[in-house]
Image (spheres, rainbow, N blue to C red):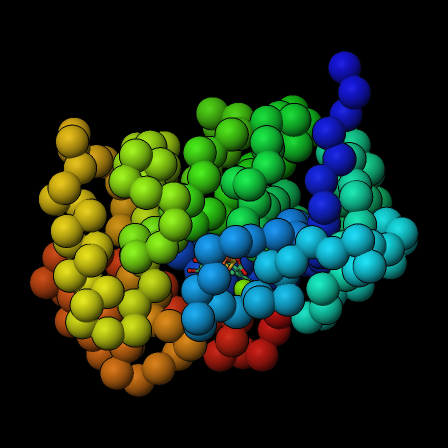
Length: 225
Ligand SMILES: C[S@@+](CC[C@H](N)C(=O)[O-])C[C@H]1O[C@@H](n2cnc3c(N)ncnc32)[C@H](O)[C@@H]1O
Ligand SMILES: Nc1nc2[nH]cc(C(=O)O)c2c(=O)[nH]1
Ligand code: SF4
Ligand SMILES: [Mg+2]
């Protein structure tokens, strides 16, 4: 079977700064492409997949930074790089929106090679990945995708990491959770948007009230990627 290459924006090794796996040494694979359009998005440079930004794979591996460049890489090419360049045993597939793409082959190849794998997704596309992959859904409830897809994603989720700027984001999350057709058994983290003080205060209060967790984008506090 032909191997499915994916458009990769960057590959880098760091500490997972968000959610349940905060603090875990991780290799990040950032895929290019997202059509959701969050106004506060950290990675706007990943939204468009333009042929004019396509480069050779050598320019992507290990060269991180906020550029719109991308290269097509197969799961085995990625695995080879991970084994030779990096030490972390946890892989985070993010973007952009990684679930635009079928991630079955990539996640299976990595899990078979002994890595744990996490996917960061907005829940706007069905999750197509190995059953053992840890799925973090960061719901974009006001945005595209619709109720059926987000419900499927939340049922697949191991963790919900909800971005919060204002009170309404909390109301939206509660509406989403209570509107589910069947019960969810999932960890909920609240993540203040862009380290804003008001957002952080709202998150702290809601975490205490609901026994949820606080996710603080710790990498931004210590100035690492
Ligand atoms: C850049 S997104 C990429 C993965 C996927 N598109 C998603 O939204 O989950 C990774 C995570 O960063 C969060 N995020 C993006 N910009 C943020 C910001 N300015 N402040 C806090 N969290 C942010 C997203 O909600 C998501 O949990
Ligand atoms: N250190 C670090 N942790 C992260 N967790 C999720 C990230 C993302 O952009 O998806 C991210 C990121 O960009 N850096
Ligand atoms: S879904 Fe994720 S990558 Fe896309 S705009 Fe929103 S935060 Fe950014
Ligand atoms: Mg980030």
